[in-house]
Every structure is written in structure tokens, then in C-alpha cells.
Image (cartoon, rainbow, N blue to C red; front, side):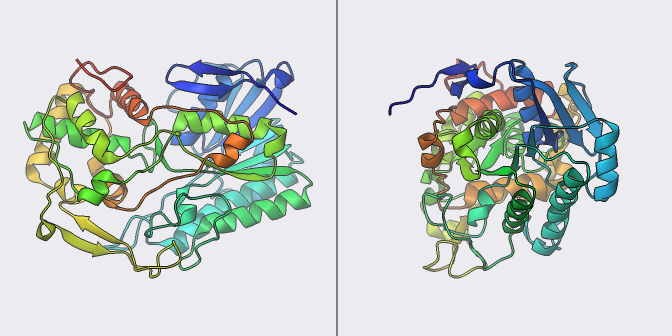
Amino acid sequence: MPSTSSVKSEGLFHGLPTFPSHVGKKRTAIVTGANGISGQHLVRVLSANTDVWETIYALSRRAPAKSTGKSHVKHIAVDFLDNGPKEIANILKRNGVKADYVFFNSYLQVAPKAGEGLWSDTEEMGRVNLKLLSNFLEALTLASAIPKRFLLQTGGKHYGVHLGPTSSPETEDDPRFLAEPNFYFDQEDLLWDWAKKNNTHWNVTRPGFIIGAVKEAAMNIVHPLAVYAAIQAHLGASLDFPGDIQAWDVGKDLSTAMLISYHAEWAVLTEEAADEVLNHSDSSHFSYGKFWPVLASWYNIPYTLPNPDASAYKVLEMPTEPPPRGFGSRGKVNVGFSFAEWAQKPEVLAAWEELKEKHGLEHSPFDDSLSSFGLIDGEILGPWPRALSMDKSRKLGWNGYVDSKDAILDTIHELAKLKMVPDVLVKAQANGTSH
């Protein structure tokens, strides 16, 4: 039988779901990692939908730097590593926490091995992040606070996109790539076992690289990219592209934090989506080559194209063969220059100090260059696609969309308000044009 549903637009975001069957039901939610890039935006989305959400418990290691100003958002400071399950359960009970739905966004980025890539210490990444989840799940059981649905957010690294070419598009039923440890697999197994034992339901969502503006959030690609463009403009230099033609052309799905949050809300409130793994992307075709002239226009500077001379590049080989695709040779990356190395140049550091003083900037990506500029090295230089299929969500009724370029511009504006970057230098409109 045909089915119908109503959708709405909120600013840049279109095709968003409405929830008439949940209006007035006074739902409660727990959002963990509430200070992070996903958690903060999820609190914003849920707290704005007062027709559905009566109380939102925002859990994080530290109290937020700035209150939401909304009485139905209850911030609770709790550390899932320093506290064991019993201590966490006692904190939940002491604060009267009961939730219909749980959104687990807690994530900890550990220091990499000396001289190696950002995610090189797979053993410690796994130990820490699995403990975050296991302690909290056990605490929910001890506190008799079992939700109707528990949503775990993981990410595109599930498919091995950080290790080399994958099967494309990536679909939720792709087999696990087991050549290297991946704590996402352990987290999924833990959640599924816990949900079965506690007779409840779950979701797992897998976004790509996340676009959003929050202070001190790990894995924020827009922050170092905006700093790079602002410094090049300050130096009177061009927006140089670091990779080859393949890196320029390749499509890479992005995931905007606000749209991830709308999708998470839709997932847990959609009965047909229970016990499903769901990809997430903006559903906006994106390549860094197509975006590069747009970014340059926002800062009123010229840009360069990839060098056609193969000898101009340093070739880096990925460690795994075959790659996550399951066959073929290991991934190769052609590096014209590295953002991490650019960030060490004396003239760049001097320009940043001048911009900090001029704009009153308060947070420096140069304090940890590998986690910021090394992050966009990996993102922009890789010549293989990231195409997160949204077919499954669409079949279940999801229609959300945002233009990733518009989302990046909006994020730069927000980062400027947070005193993390200078704003763009020209008046740029949401459709990607400037004047």
C-alpha cells in the first residue's frame, strides 16, 4: 500500500522528517559525548523539537563551556573512563536519569604512535573506546535505565576508507575488513549482545567526515581547512591544492553534524528502522576539486590546479594489501605537499599569530598539527572515493539533504563566532556564490 509522510526545511536543511505520531508523548533522551561535534549538534536538534522531547540529559566528561539556556536540557558531568559502571549508575540514579532513547556519541582520539599516522595506535584506540561503551552499557543495566532504542554512532572507518580503496559505494552489508583491528566492530558486537540480553532495540549509524563547529572537537576537517585558506589570504598567496588530478576529481561524501542529528532522531523514532545499521551522508555530490575554486573565492585569492607532472609528487603507499576492497594492489597517494609540513613553516606560524591578535582568536590548531592538519592530509590527498550509500535509509523513508558546500560555509561562519578562525573575506551566500 502507498504511504505518505510530511517533510520540512530548516535553513540549509531540506526534506527533514516530522513526527506527528510522537507529538505530545513527552519523550526523554540521553546524549553522551554532549560536548563533541556530534553530541552538541544532536542536543541542539532534540532540544528544538519540544513537541516530542520533554527532557534531554546531556552527558559529558566536563560541563559545557556555555549553557544551552534551555531548562529541559540537563547537563550531567560523568567520565566513562575514570568511573566504573557502578559509579556511573549511581550518578544516573542520583540525577533521576531515565531515558526512552539513548544516543551514544562518546569518542576519544588517543595519541598516535611516534612518527606514524593519526589512527596508528589501533590497540589503545580500541581499548579506550570499547571501555567507554562497555562501562556505560553496564551502568544502564545497573541503574535499571534500559531505553527503548540505543543508537551507537561509529563512522566511515568501519569500511576501511582510511586504509585504502574500498568497495564503492559502501553499503551497510559490506563484509568487515579484518586485516587491521577496528574497534567499531567490537562496539557493534558489544551493543548487539547487550540489546539482546536486555530485550531492547538498537541502531548503528556510520557518517563520513563530519562538518560542524564546536570548540576542541576531534576530527574536525573544516577548522584546519579554514585556517589554511585564511593564512594563505593573509600572506597574499594562492590556495594551492596538495594532491594530484585523481585526488582533485574523486567524489567524497561528507556528513554535516546537524543533518547527522536529524537522521539520528529519525532513526530512533522510526519503528521500521529498529535494529538496523544505517549509513549517513549529506546526499550531496562533493569533490575537493569542484570545491577548491569556491573556497578560494570566499577568501578572494587565486587557486592552483594539480601539477600534471608525475615527478612533482612523493608517492606514499598504504600499509595493507589487498586493500579494503578485497582485491588489487595497496592504495597509493601522490603528495604534492603536506598540510602538516606547511603548518611548521615559520612564515605560516607568524601569520597565525598576526591573525590571532587581529581577530582575537582563542583556539589554535597548531597545538596539535597532526590531529588537525594531518587529518586533512588524509582526507584530501586520498584518491579513492567515499560513497556512503543512503539507499537503505531512503527505502525506510529518510529524505534529508544539505548541500555540503553550504554546510562548510555555515560552519566557517560559526567557527568565526567561536573565535577559532577569521571569517571568510567576501560576503558569501548559502548557494555557494559570492559577491
